[in-house]
Image (cartoon, rainbow, N blue to C red; front, top):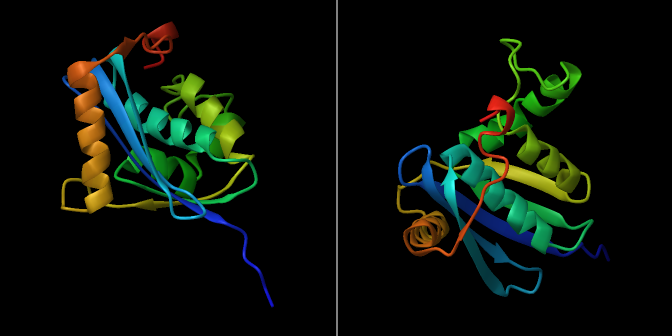
Length: 163
């Protein structure tokens, strides 16, 4: 008998009111026994891409290491960084993009990479705002967060012109 390792399913979204502007992120985590967890947060001034990344990071931080994780997001930015191997290319070029400019959101990408090394993560992109129940819930969490707070300071936003 082949016993499969417990799996976690994660849905994420990020949103901003203005870009940059107040931002929020939301995630739904369904753990290995099927229990649902919702997490979210807000920042005073940030960007949509930063919120998309933070949502994935915060979700991965909640999951025990060495677990299989299926992440569904409407962020092409996040999914393409993994599927198109932008992350390796950026590292190979000393965190420069194809235009030889500093990679935006390096602080978050470095955090993201550390987490990817501790999980068996698979990413799936879905189109946002098309009625996908969990994606819509994540969007509601993100919007509610930036609408109501409490707000954190996004120390990485704007640092060194890397946003």
